[in-house]
Image 1 (cartoon, rainbow, N blue to C red):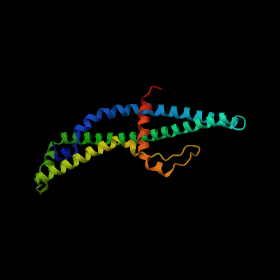
Image 2: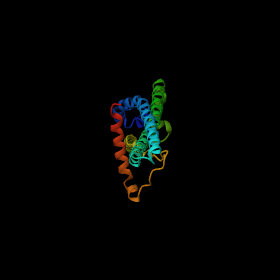
Image 3: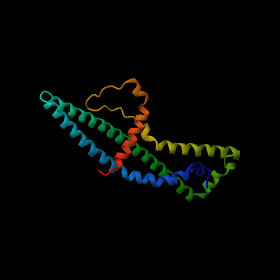
Image 4: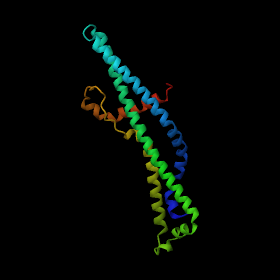
Length: 203
């Protein structure tokens, strides 16, 4: 096996374990996106109904109008969560596309390597470059690359946490106090956990 292939195969054990899971998740993404779009459309319809009820009853029955307004705000909050989940799924879909492209490239390199063994043998020997390399330095660099690949894989597991949802719902919501901004990360994690459970519930 050439030096290049050994360097690029770092973290292969982790990739093999997570590879099947990634494929299964990739297959589920379109279904989940469709489910989110259906829920989003349903929520938009409910928001319109509640808004119409508020407009019709705000002068005649204030209590009913307030209840409808509360429900409308609740639907808007869930609509915002759905939009965040949809963005996270789009981001995951893009990352999976990149991973698939890298895997295809690695397969192509392996095929070329198997077709031309003289070339891989030439690359594998340091004498072909006219420079001798310290084996310990090469092993240390290989370990650093494997660690960075493993860290990148673990970081991609938390990619939902990095997706920023700045889109504002159709109607303005009250601004948050300064203390709420401090706990925004915790709230985001709770919301994401809620969304994960919500997505796994049968429709």
